[in-house]
Length: 134
Image 1: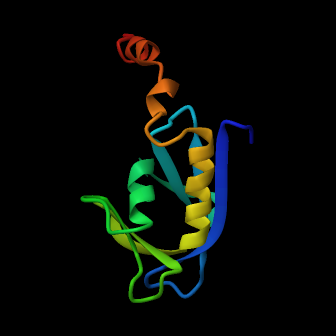
Image 2: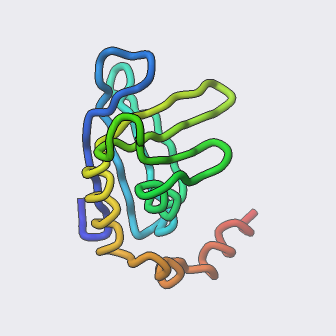
């Protein structure tokens, strides 16, 4: 791992499962607007969800998100928990995480790229050149 990437690991609870699942948050300055939440599955495979970093930061304090990813503090379970709802055509899951670990991860991403400064890390010309290559 280098100074342009941060990660945070923790065990999470998935609704309907008694055994905690190992998870990994990751962020890279190469994609400054997004964070990735990965869950370790069978045989070391990882299932990944990528979504807006701003959505995660907002969800730490209040309900945020529409559609496939929704995040909110767990008011019923205590202020120390965060709930993330993930929905896809293949299924639906509610993930319960430690709020402190997620807050630490977000703070680490802000140390690399302050919220609102993401545009300075995106090379729009290179992106356009890449997607127009045929």
